[in-house]
Image (cartoon, rainbow, N blue to C red; front, side):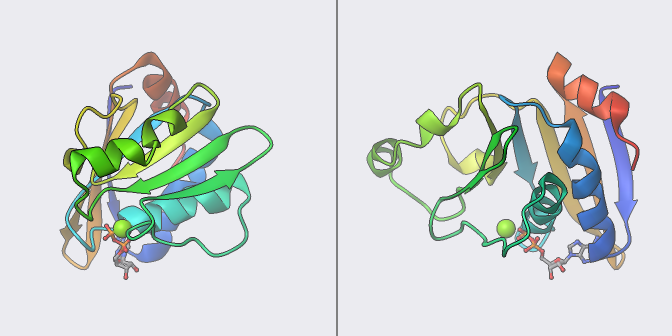
Length: 152
Ligand SMILES: Nc1ncnc2c1ncn2[C@@H]1O[C@H](COP(=O)(O)OP(=O)(O)O)[C@@H](O)[C@H]1O
Ligand SMILES: [Mg+2]
């Protein structure tokens, strides 16, 4: 499957979709999370992290650029490129090293970082009535395997 559309009526639905996605993620995958401020990107990331077994807080990486998590099966790096960084500062942060075959990278505001690794899954969220519409597009085989097994 290459594309799925869902309506998420509440925050709990966003969390549930994230939880459903979590066990399907494979090390090396890159997920781009698109949508305006308040679209629900961090909420979805929180659901994914809960689904992987993270029990603590999930901080938004808006000011830190990246929040790292370690699980037995994979590393997960949650990025937020909303805050502008000049290209030199960005390269000096070493963020490219996080994109490697052992890690899953979740990226909010991918359009603000130049030359990011391509997405296996591109996720777009937007307000819809009181909830959110979400479209997930697979761009690679790994992404399609994920969507084929998604039960939410
Ligand atoms: N499906 C949903 N329906 C209604 N509100 C939602 C939904 N998903 C998330 N929210 C709410 O949207 C708000 C902003 O979410 P957040 O994940 O911080 O957005 P972003 O990271 O895209 O800026 C939060 O208050 C969250 O509870
Ligand atoms: Mg956010």
